[in-house]
Length: 314
Image 1: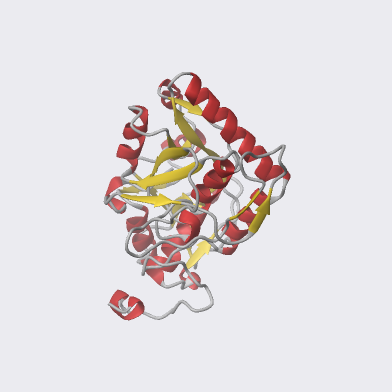
Image 2 (image 1 turned 90 degrees about the vertical axis):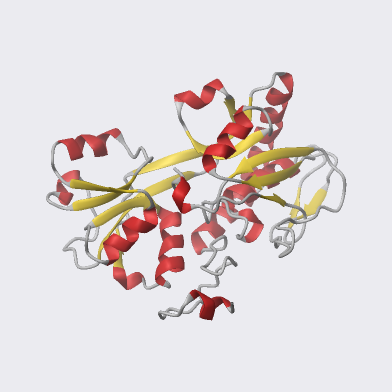
């Protein structure tokens, strides 16, 4: 699930991830030509939106879009998904180059084999026509944010939302059971074009709850509401946990080889504990960005009603 086109930055930039930061070591049986490399906390160049790489290696060209903290040119290491994918490929001696563009274009450019792959996408039968699905490594929880004054702290059945209005975003699928409950009039759905619009309606008490990706919701909460978490009540039980994938453009033996190497890289990250560490960082907000398009520091970010220019110095 990605933000609608009207909610994202439509400019295009390329992010080249490389080796600076925490030491991650692989055995010679696991990776060639690297025995070890140092890569976990790269930072973006303010002039070029890319991170340089210190040695020539085979490159994999990947499209993606803005969906912090999972993928963002403004996030540390390009976001969680970007970071993991780049590390998995690097473990196999491949360099990942990510080009950010609108989501629909990101899909189409890769489907037409102008790029090697696109990241990151939920399962859809239609996607199998153009792509090979690589190994998944994370499931994104879709959760409810609700008004802080509602008389419950979690939910177990859709009857708990009886009579309430739930904000949804156009273009999202959610789940069949959710739409079946809506058709039975257990609750009312209120569609908007963007998740941000739904959050603003929730803050104004124009809807009772909204559905959103958990960590993208946290991004909006901190970016647009200065982290005033008391404004909302986040229900812990997810509607669904949705896996997402790197999609590799179909292209014969080369595509199969890339899928094989990438899947092997993901298994290495799982085996040596790297993936678990990066998941922990995702939970802790390591990949979050703030309204200034810089990495978010939860300890320093202001919580008042300051303007963007005051916060960011422009």
